[in-house]
Length: 222
Image 1 (cartoon, one colour):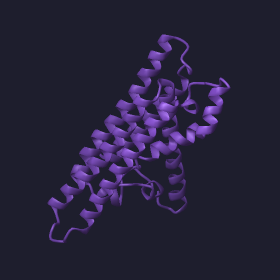
Image 2: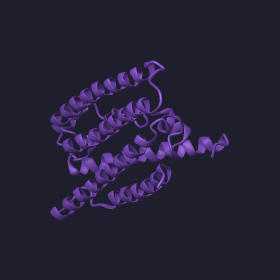
Image 3: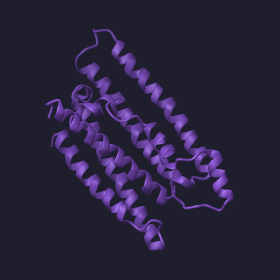
């Protein structure tokens, strides 16, 4: 199966999983509800695992395609890419956006006894851990960006299979970081918060995709 066909099928399945997350009891009222929510969250993570494996394999065959044509993506999506995909630190910006609170407001809400258990109610410990993860991810992003720059600056003597193999390794490392970032965030969040984050991430993914399709359609690119 080509990556394009895989991506379309994978996206359709992601929509179905996100729909199931939206339909899940939130907040979970019983232990069964909580277990169901955890299982759904794990299904979504496993779905991202599948994407990671297939894309990494495809990149080993033709890594350059993910920079020039990026199978299955629109021109808008490609303009936002970092090393053939979304920038890992985007996940942290999404958490901050979804929480929609400053530290002072959060403390004020806690003092007033306002607590819903969603992303607006991240604990101080959770905020601290998220900040640590973001700093670690930024550092790793910078390292991979430097590696890509070094690859681009290498002498023209290194061409053909050897150079493409090195690019494939960089893409694989970037994919590893994207997947690791999601999994690390899942460990910090409660099942309800994790479900909310995954739905928001999918909404962002599909929203950018829809805008990109409309943009390319107007330009006669699709």
